[in-house]
Length: 321
Image 1 (cartoon, one colour):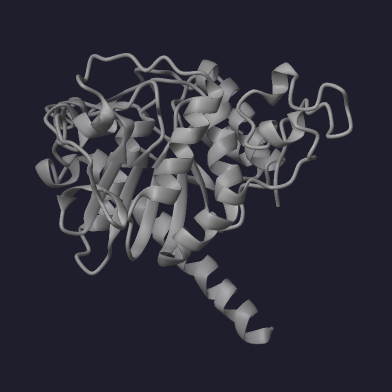
Image 2 (cartoon, rainbow, N blue to C red):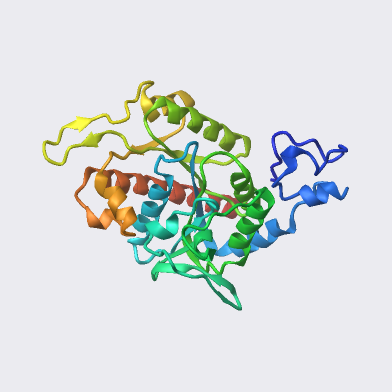
């Protein structure tokens, strides 16, 4: 089902395709030409392309700096530890692509073949795609309006030779803007397993996460669950726990209870996480005994269980029909 901007003026309006809320919508050109909101043909092309991708997971956050890309990177690393699984990580944070650095791929280039763009591989079973690979320098600023961002996301989904994949993880920018509407619209016909939403314990972060949850409900995007990052700090020497970001309103746990959505887990602060990301390494293998590693692994297992459960339901529906 195709979603439209919340303030869409309507296809019959004189402002169709011309209003401020139309910026970045895949149907803007069609509406402005008077052709009505016919679906972008790319949606069907992407649906066909995504037939070889079993599970699609979006990683969202309401606020920047809560560890969303860090979680995306370690979710990819964790899933790829099973060598029988093929994993892909797509970075659609167009203006702040940090995934190449975190995955140890800074300075790599995208290569094109007859079958499309080739992902950059960390391991044989872990491929990555990011606008960061298309920049001349990591310091180059991407100064694009919504429609150009939308076109880039379309290319990533339609023109990258992903191959047979078990998990496609999509790292998104913070908020509920052009990139989020585009990824949901373009994958609308291809089935998205759901979204993992990242927060930190303090109310200023939870406020924006509630908006993200509201966005998911409005665009009918299933929510796999919420992860609370930076959830306390366990001293490596004395083992005492300190609340660096106090959960003044009860943190993600109370919010999830109130909104009746799953809390996937809490990841405590560990300075080595940031160090591993800066060095482009997997924290999960660098510090296997950390409480944060245990939390990550439990969360990853819950995400796998969610995807497996939904696969079983879909198979039953196909058999019964």
